[in-house]
Amino acid sequence: MKKVFFFFCFLTIVLVSQAQTGVKLPALDKSPMDMAYYPPNYPVLRIQDKATEPLTARVIYSRPQKNGRNIFGELVEYEQVWRLGANEATEIEFFKDVKIGNKKIAKGKYTMYAVVHPTSWDIILNKDTDIWGAFKYDSTKDVVRINVPVQKTTDVADAFTITFAKSATGADLIMAWDNIMAALPIAFK
Amino acid sequence: MKYFAAALFFCCIACNEQQKPSTPTTIQKDTITPVAKEIANPYEPVDVSPMDMSYLPVDYPKLKMAKAITTPPIARVIYSRPHRQGRKIFGNLLKWGEPWRLGANEATEIDLFQPITIQNKKIPQGRYILYCIPQENSWTLVFNSNIDSWGLKPDPQKDLFSFQIPVQHSDTTAEYFTIVFQPTAANNRSANLIMAWDDVVAKLLINY
Image 1 (tube, chains in turn orange, blue):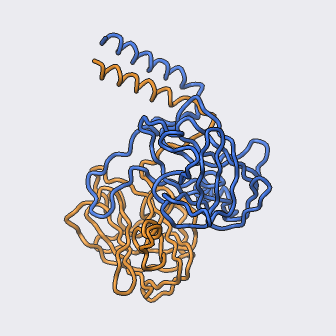
Image 2: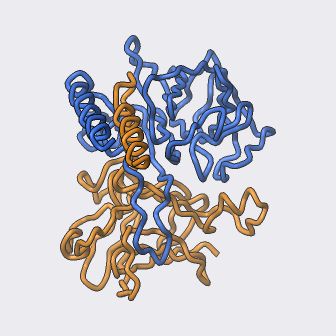
Image 3: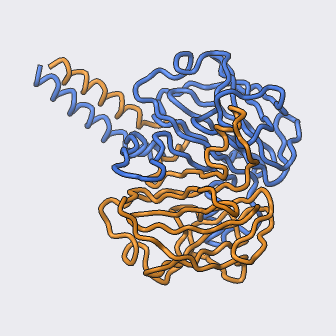
């Protein structure tokens, strides 16, 4: 009974906490934002003096959840431009010049999109930054567009995930959701 | 006892209903829903203190998408949002006089797309980390150049600007730490950077 009483005390606090603050505070996002670095975990390595390479790239993206839905070909339709996440368009920043395919990409910030096909994705880097979604995608501002194959994985990622993995020529940008994984090779070595 | 609990419950509901019409800008209900623990992620699980981003002008990316704005943004803050979970935050979880990263995980970052002025000091365009030293009645808010670092131990040798700001106590609590810009009523070239958690609200006035 005590537990029930404390539960209701807690509930009271929670409900009261919804009252006016005078400031509009945004709610927590359903598709929370996250950041991925190359080298992976760079900020932690840095304060431990364990970073052996300089910061090369950073991605800011939002993480929609699968929630039991079929993702590719349904929620994310084939042949449509997708923001590679949710909310704000996904942003990638390079801290030095890199190469994607045969294209030299200058140090700086870019917006990323993908056009999803059944067995491959087109990955797009575009110069128009600080925007929402892919609703105003302008292909004239593309910097590079490259087709990469996708793999079917046995593990399922419930939340859309972007992460970097070291490669022989630099790093692969890994993009995974549901049972699909794509890798974008980035060369800087 | 059961009846008492039920009565209390209905009382709470009733109170809450009554408040609704007069509080259009209340913290929304999902502010208090904890982040769902992710069932599976073979790569990188979702963080319990999720990251978020606030722009000045407020909702800049949406305004840009709607073509309601064509000028570049003024500033943006990238931070993580720890939640209170019934704890007393200030003077307890966060100790008086000890630096706090204004969030969780990575140090909180502020990007200035153009120079701004705070308390008559001009701050150049660029990227900074932001941390605070909370005291009972005021915070020291510090702009520091040690960007892309984890937030646990700021390096005071890289401090660039610091400001004293008063704190206010709200009669309500923010479950999730929140940073947001709020334009001032008087002047469209100024805004407050609002930092709120638990019952504490701190405001840093920015001119641009």
